[in-house]
Image 1: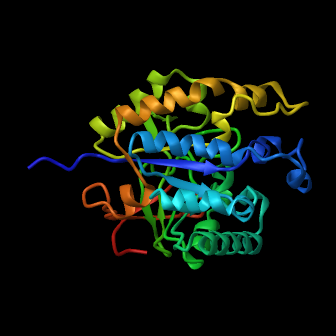
Image 2 (image 1 turned 120 degrees about the vertical axis):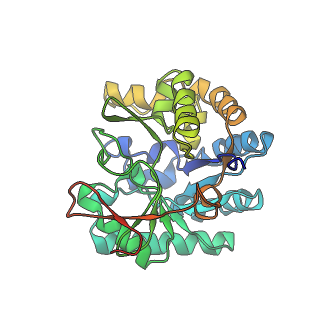
Length: 307
């Protein structure tokens, strides 16, 4: 008997262009309400693409966005997509105390659930900012009623990442929350990122397709892809004074994004985060292992039942 087909998880981080972490030093949060928002139209472009391919996805949405664009949130849910939390205003976990983080995620979960009328199960930290120094955030998420997180990127990066973390979903010992990392491919002793975002725009399309084929076909595991609404907006205002590296990371290949995502949606099978992992039948939805955090050191794998 053949295995069921592998369904990858498609996800969108719903934030506007002026809310990205790279612009923190150039755009004051206090000015956000005076900047014309483009997130509703750009998210609409993604929704139209997903509808064309009959794909359901997970939308990790800022509470700030949900307060100002409740009709967008309701459209997401009415279209059959999963609504999840991206925090209130894209403050990185590394910039918060545990108490501040708790207040942030409780506030955001309440806003999203009130607007959408359905339970929020998932969370993704701004800029994948659950790192070695902020692993306590997973405990807070479990205590505040979240079932899963997609906040650890198991890569080496100048702004985020835990390169020694497991590459595939795992339950965290002590609290039971499921962490669902963004997709990487293991080559030459390193985890290579191929889960979307800037890598999807900056590198040739063939690289991302190779990554998902490797994970699906060779490792027989589902992958996780993510993108942002502003990546579909080549006409967005340019932010002055940013560094050359930031300029390249943010603006390169914006015009290609719709065409590339259209192709990716057609070449692989996609679904919501909860459907692809939490609610999926074995073997892809099973979590037979727990992962024990060893004071921020390398990850120790322990059999189920141990804590």
